Structures are given as structure tokens and as C-alpha cells.
Image (cartoon, rainbow, N blue to C red):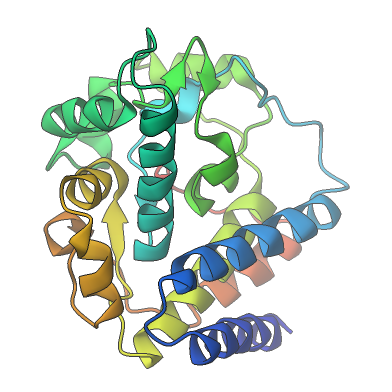
Length: 250
């Protein structure tokens, strides 16, 4: 069943890529489809679970290392440029500048080091995510049932944070299907550290075009991951059976 779902998702992304080869619209089309698939299905998959503790004003998990695909990073880079152009003189300052500063602090750090550093995400302002509509799958797929446990974990205490297995599994399934379709199309299909990937994309807009031409233009931000495939289909099966996947990374 899980492999069948993976295959259907993979074919969805294949079809989108085939209809827009090398197009600038591919980034927006692929990410919109990925986000829509997640939002349309997560409610049903988590309907029998307790109420989530995640809400506006709780950025506890926003100091974790976040990974994202190239289309997600390029979409967010566009979103940031639009905000900077509309409000360049706000008290917030340029978002692109905040990303560059965050990257200097977090570049090269692994998951454990990032968690110990507790450096907040550059997009959290007064406890709220200011890029929420364009947030990557990693952020959408990380949800907790215990706000107090989240706060304790981010304060450095050794506690188990109860997270939603369906959120993590569905995020992984969609992301893996997208990566597999990208690889088949000859496009870089790795996962990248968000701060560094965004810093690269914002510093040189031509990186998006280079990626569409088949180059791994975000390579310096690449995170070592298993090849795209059906690994997350098994994770999805375990989540559907009530199992909880482990791991802290968003």
C-alpha cells in the first residue's frame, strides 16, 4: 500500500516536470503541489491523534537544523526578495540580510551542534513565522503534542518530545517522491541545509537557472542523505500502524 502511494506521488511530480522542462514555473508548480498534497492529507492521517501543541507564538523547534529540496529553497528565496522589495525599511530589516547573518552562525554545524547552539530561525519574529505560507515541508512535518517538553528540550534538558509520526512520515513520503522524480529528470535531488542554501540562492539569483539546467548549484549546502527512493514508504507504513519515527532534525 505504502509503495503504491509512493508511486502515485512520484508520477504526479514526473508529470509536472514533463510539462514544464527547464521552465521557471517548475519551482512554483512543484512546491505548490508538494505543499498541497501535505496539507490535504495530514488532517485525515492525524485525525485520531491528540491535539497538537503547536501554535503561533511557540517557536521552540525553530532552532533545529532544517533541510529542504532545491525547489523549496528557490521558492523561498523568491518569497524573501518580494518581502524585501515591498518593505525594505521596516524595523525588521531586510530578510535576506537576516538569512546571511544566520548562515554565518550556523554554517557547517550538524544536528546536535545546532540544537546546542539554540540559534533561532531568522524568520521567527515576535514568536511568529513570517514566511509561513512558503515554509518548507520539513517545517510542516514537525509537530509536537507537548509544548513544555519542547521548551525543555530546547533548553538543553534530556527529555523525550512526543511528536506526530504521521506528520513526519507524510512529509518524508512526499519529499522522497519529489526527490526521486527530480533525479529521473536529471536535476539535483539532494537535501540542503536551509540557511546556507538560502544564502547561496539569495546571493546569486542565477543559481536557480543553473539548477534548472541540471547543475547542482546549491552543492555547498548539501546534506548527506540516502538516495531518493522508497525508504520513506516504509516509514509511512510504520506511522500508519501507530509507530513513532525517531530523530530531531526538521
